[in-house]
Length: 284
Image 1: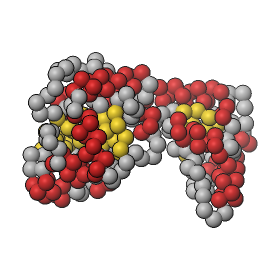
Image 2: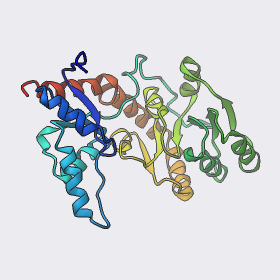
Image 3: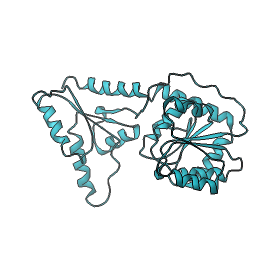
Image 4: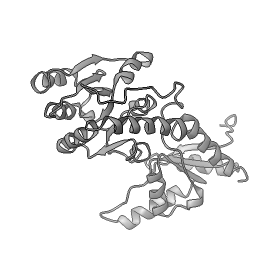
């Protein structure tokens, strides 16, 4: 440890990691700052809720500042009692600002709109709901599913029964994905997770995502997409019908998706917040 002398510590703000308080104290003994980074602190209820809230706040206040993944997460920290002037929001980003210009797509209504899913084919992604939703639509879209995973065989079997025209492309990465993003009219992630959402937005696509850990609220807004309740087939059907009913609106929403990842939510902006948080603590 004598050769390990960091200027600052950024650690996950999770009290389940028992070594974190020791690491923070070790930094403070050397007059160096420690910053917590996390999703937020959802409301605590149930048995001994007040005691658990106090313990959580005691843990969080060991940090000199907190960086939240989302605006909602920062508000949760503030609601718990963490000082607002020591809170920062670095919206979670997985890629840089788009290097390519906003793709030009036809303004008119496509005869056969393309709905795209990109991701690992596992149960929590709920691609089964997407197949069923497309199957009952009056104007059935072209559904392209890019990815591989443990659920692929089950999903292909379901597609043969529910929506035989669904296209399973298999795994694609990097530049191999570009043609699919360029051809698509709408990107849909009906389940949790999904690092491809921001990539889809960088190609000017409106998006439908399932509500998850709260980070979606900053990324997917009324101006560029829809958030649907997870595991709800009726809500997904309704939202798909609404999305594909107006091509002009889709194009405008896609342009807003592009603006969001170009100007607000990208790796560069995320790094800027981390630097600002560190600079705010220089005098400690």
